[in-house]
Image (tube, rainbow, N blue to C red; front, side, top):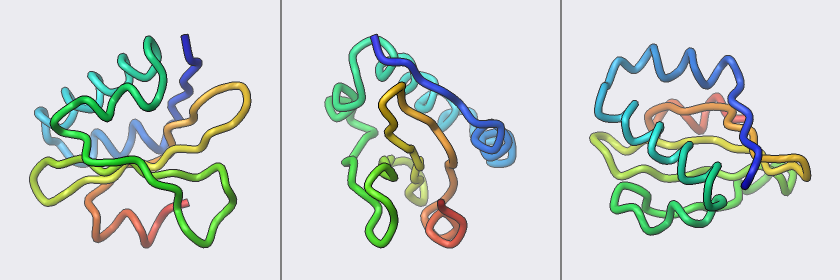
Length: 98
């Protein structure tokens, strides 16, 4: 079982979006990551891929979600677990992450 940590900014981003379907997708992803590991979510139809963020340290990744305008979830992989740092629409995500 993988340890996951949810940063306060991640929760604020979710509340700011006010999209209930997207919230359900995120909850499903969080549960799957906790139970089966990060790459188990690639089986979900909403998850397109997981890629390393270029130009930053090796720990930063983004999860691309196929919903609406295209959402991204920013994560940091550290030895003790996975930190969920940010989520937003594509156009705003890359300006503010990490």
